Length: 578
Image (tube, rainbow, N blue to C red):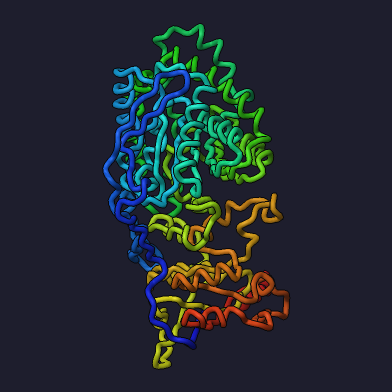
């Protein structure tokens, strides 16, 4: 396959994928981040709050992607993206938090993790609602990345606290209403796991007019159909000294650790780092069994199970009243709850919901390797700063890690096609590579689809690797609409397109791309051209009027027409051979 092109209109504008969100000097109340936010239920005494220093300037500029090989970008900065912490860190922090809360004997409270760092005043609020552990550190492996785009608060429920489910709901509801009054134009995210997911659903059902976004990990709404309910009578008979066995803890924590090693072997990566990390986690779990016993002593565990029972009944009875945008995350190897079946049930019952499945993961999804909450939210197009999603201003460029994972999935296509890309310099000379593509936008690349549009899978990554240019592809809207609104039944496989910057094709989105000086990729022939029939190879299905030219010219954009050849010929060879 070869790609060729020629320049038509020149322009000299700045790159679009660098966006600065530096906060203004101290005018907004949102510039002040609380170092520790405390709140209590209506059944407890109120706690005080302490202020945090003014947020420092934060830029959401695109992470530079440096080529390590021809088809791979270096991932050395992975820890700097916020996923450097491991299971051991959860136990270390949990031990300190439990010791601190046990000493003051206080009620449930909010706290803002220091490692989340300062955030932009435009960042929406994210409230993390913990599961059965109640510590509030379930997102410890995601704090740094979340802190760059959210104002993160976590709810901590002390071990000895016995606040009822309705009491917890009222506590969260009070916070949600208060923060909504402060920033009525911004959404509030409720991220909950198991018990926390029930709390999120309960709050959403009681506040349908508040703009809430729910992210529910293995919701405990399936408690009545789980094995947990039958353990309550057994726990009442067990001595207090008996703790959960090591094998049980490992099965709940890790999902399928051996598959992680095998996946790396299949990808050609060394399994040694993964084995070392897993061994560290195994040692951590065995070393911190006393901490687990402190988190869930017998009396607390019994209380939490009764709390789960009440939470499940309460949330299920009010599902019809939940109008919030909801993303359900279900694990395939959850040994506490039937999460896969429950995920399907909830997405069928909730009008604005989507489901993402994680086949080889266990109950504690956010503590496992291979799970990145920010990437999940981005892939589902659930990140927004206002009342509605803006595909241009709310977009966050892919990190090096996200790009590498997606590029690895398409490696077979690159090997099969062996694409050769050619570009035209300003003097008219045709050269191999993309050096003829201007680095500054706005730029519009206009071309035609080969069979099934497979050329996009190699073209977009090559632009990013060779020129550090992120192409924003204008894509058929069906890839952004689920089956409830007449779209596809499962949007999960298309998350990678949204992570890489795909935009629903429309006049408004095209205008915004050009005005934001982006590099846009447009196929006027659309899906009809990609799904062409026999005898229609290399035939254009473009509309008679090309309004996109007028819009691009308005912003002085460089328009680059290009063609691709080879895919249809490969398909003919395969057809003749078989």
